[in-house]
Image (cartoon, rainbow, N blue to C red; front, side, top):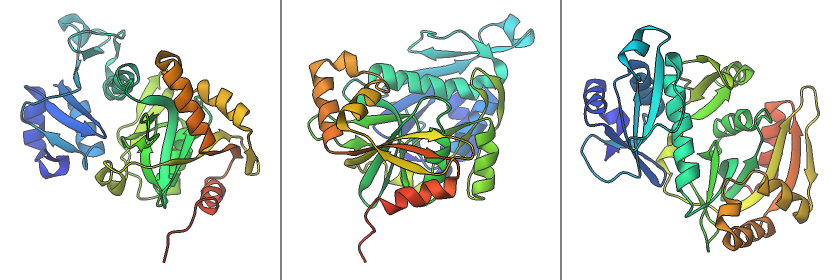
Amino acid sequence: MTRLNQISYDNFEDAIRSSGIRLRTGPFTTNLSTKLRDVIHNLYLLYADHTVSIEPGFSDFHLKIHQPSFFRRWYHPQVNFSFDGLTPFNPLPRPQAYAIFEWGLNWCISNYSHQYLMLHSAVLEKNGHAVIFPGAPGAGKSTLCAALSLSEWRLFSDEVALIEPVSNNLVSNPRPISLKNKSIEIIKAFSGEAIIGKTIYDTSKGTIAHMQPPVESVHRSNEKAKPKIIAFPKFIPGAKKSLIPLTKGEAFIKLCENAFNYSTLGLKGFDMMSELIDQCDCYQFEYSDLNDAIDTFNSIVPQKPL
């Protein structure tokens, strides 16, 4: 496999339109085929530093993004997501083709990766300290995640924390960060280094756009980390930053609410969650200013040795 930005756009387009390309993201390899130009363009931009192969080989997931029928190509055009030849979702409006790829891949991982304990969380690491940011939609998780990743924090994931059994290590899976509504302009204003793909309007989540993960985060995606901090973020306009310690019991209950497969794993899930809580400092974090938020988390991780 080679970095996508080392393959010409024409060769990439030819491969993904025919037998598909194999895209490596963290521990997963996805075979993806599509003929849709906007999807191809966004992939080439946002996954530029990921490794891909245009040769056949093993893949964890086989995906296809395509238009459902000739009739729907012209009248209220739609797009389908196929997984192993099945279509688990209803078609979406054609302009949402790239979004259905990202959402569909999230669905594949959260439904078929039970070798990990999976939490609906952003994960970032700095100086050997990994921070888990569980968050409900609208909590400001992705905005904070994007800002930290642009501020010398290593991105593990914007969407799913992957925790190994036994070691309780976090596994890195850096992919484009999903920004919604006002967050898109906030991050553009926050950093001129943010590379953001096509804006997609009128989705079930409002207006969305995806930010390319930082190069170093992608290149170091084989490096795991120990979780040290769990912080439940909440964006509140005008609020002063507030980092409030949580008891282990409070954190356990809140974290279970953000777990994809805690119940599926049964006793193993309970043991892994208990060990995770025991080894982490746990907080409720409220903020309104990204720079204040970054200062807060920079202050509670050890400095890099001189």
